[in-house]
Each structure stands twice: as structure tokens, then as C-alpha cells.
Image (cartoon, rainbow, N blue to C red; front, side):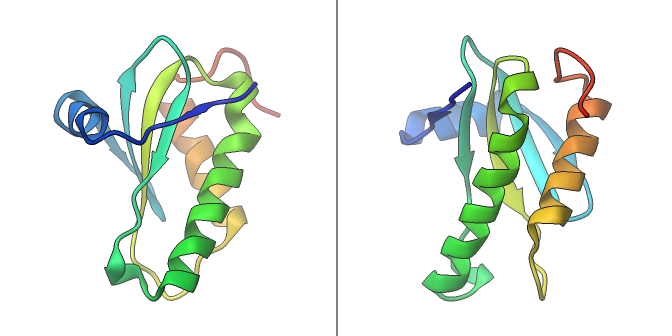
Length: 110
């Protein structure tokens, strides 16, 4: 299942103001009920130069994509916590914890 990218400022503010914020080890997720699965990644300049920021975005998108078939339709805003190193495994593990804790999956994740 594919997901839509959130690109408009009004969509970002709608999620940030009305969504529920959830924290985990390496990740902060804000989610808001929606008719389809939508996702955006927020990585500012404090995370490093553009090469590092783009790497973080790729890792987060791939971690999100691995759970797409199981997710109940919501709009998600993914924000990593500032760290020395970033890894796909850590993002995936923490996103899975959040999905299970908040009951945002349709059926059990393998």
C-alpha cells in the first residue's frame, strides 16, 4: 500500500495543532485521523548538513514504508530526536513500539 506525502503548510499545522504527540527513544510521532495514509518527515538544520538530513529522511521513510500495509489510515508527522548516529533498525523498532502502543495497526505486525 502506498502513502501520500504531506507537503502543504496548512496540513502540517493541522496535524501539529490537533494531532496526538507520542514519544519513543529516537523518534517523536504526531498523528491525526485521516481518510488515507499520509506522512511527512521534519528534519531541520540542527540535525546537520544536507547530506546527513537527507540520510535521516530516507531512513525514516523506509521505516514507515515497511509498516504501510498494516497501518490504520492517519496522517503522520515523523520527527527524529537529535543524536550522534541514526539507524534504520532503531527508527523501525521505535516506530513499531509507537504503532502497537497507540493501536494504529489493523492486525499484528510480524
